[in-house]
Image (tube, rainbow, N blue to C red; front, side, top):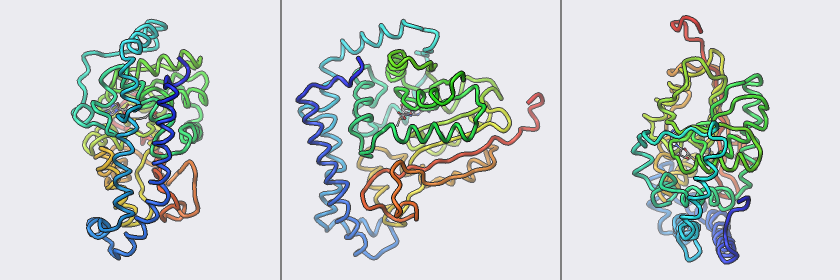
Length: 363
Ligand SMILES: C[S@@+](CC[C@H](N)C(=O)[O-])C[C@H]1O[C@@H](n2cnc3c(N)ncnc32)[C@H](O)[C@@H]1O
């Protein structure tokens, strides 16, 4: 099962949806930005009130919400397509889970956090924790048809290259919120010989991650667990990394995860979070980001961007904190902190080092 199992009709339909996303990202976005500039305000709420009258912004916001629904639930939507093959997909994952079981550690007793269970993240009903069909649907959706419209391998390669610079000697690595393991395998490829463990709260995507690693011959471990309470011993890990995790967690959960990361890291170990955090483009950028978070059911994308991550990291016991926009397709405008010419996700790379914990005795 190497290719995303979409029929010809479903692939053609998804290309149409991508075309709609192109309109959203280009003309509709540019018209919305013009409307926002005409609003002449530094307050996102005021910009929203005034821009609503603009046809371009009405189109932009409609496409932002509904193109995602088409993608998942249209006539040839990815979720519909996968659900038709639900039993077959479940069987594929059950069988592959029996191969090299030492690499896949599931925990049926783990309680899913409410923010995972209760939010239809990305407008995907029930999200990715439900069953095999959901896991395959999310994989197909994020690997080929995401809002970002850039090759999903590009940010993962940047993620892995940054990890390598941050902790070149790392032997024990955690990739938190790994879903189907793309980011975990990217790390495993640049850290040959290291023990790289992808951690996620949801079982179906972990089983899929395991299948993909077996297919690709990449040695990775996967474990069902919560980033807020890791199973690892104190000071046992060299690098704790995450790729698009924190924008899916409420602030208190992010905070607990930072404290956990510091607990399991060795003194001087590396911390890395690659996600949407810094928002270029001032008030207009914040307005667009808040709208995206609301329309695509990613409520914590908004609250995460509002956190003071530097302060949070210091409080959790980190030093050498750096954060910068590290976009896979950098434009001069984004580098300068301004709005880009096309709408896309703005990725921020946050890196830090674990401060020694004096009271821990042996470490
Ligand atoms: C946007 S996806 C990450 C994508 C993945 N890292 C990749 O690059 O392909 C976020 C993932 O975080 C997981 N997640 C959310 N909260 C979590 C938590 N507290 N602990 C572990 N995983 C969590 C979700 O189940 C989901 O699979």
